[in-house]
Length: 312
Image (tube, rainbow, N blue to C red; front, side, top):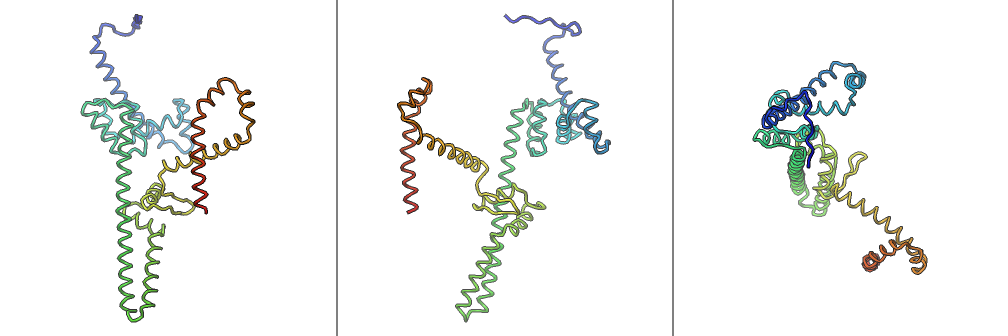
């Protein structure tokens, strides 16, 4: 049986439960608006303080770290002043506000959260994170579509330039087939070089998608779309996705561990003396995994033979 806790003397126990629930909802709504207003006040205070005074002021006045203050300020920047009053009737959890206010969150996720709350839905942190993930995926797809279109336009422009150059060369060298063939090869080589030139491609693509210059994200996507890696400055971008690169790194780590385990096993004492030295739980583990190990060894023999045959 649940023990009934005493009601503190300063509360009014006579208030009906539905009314108390409404009061709680009202207070939560006020709290959401306060988060935004606190953020606005912090932004204003930081603007008034001279360089070097911000962190000491936060600590002296509130005992806050910069990260704590930034949470309020991010919410205030993400949900502007006209929206602050509107939050009084919206059921968006404070934790959802924080999740939606990070600088890299697409505005579409915030708009969807507000729209769903206006329709009466209760937006939790988990739902906000799902909206953010969905908006980021859509944003990534839109960017990829723009880059693909830009690459096609770039290649078409280079092909048009190449055809014009070949037509001009054909007119000039029509009577010298050998010289014409050499000139056409030179023009085609120049086209391949232009298409593969990261700097020239980057300038064209920046104009195509309407940005001052490409970011690392753009270059990574370009490498994946083109199916080849290329270097920009001291940074190399791989055509593989980050997930594929992580899987490769994990496989390389495992390969090193397995090679070391095989080396240790090859130099192990005879099984009889080894098993005699094992604890019962260790013998049980060996018995449980031995068939899997033997199957792996058999597949490894076949794979190694295939590699040897390829080398021959």
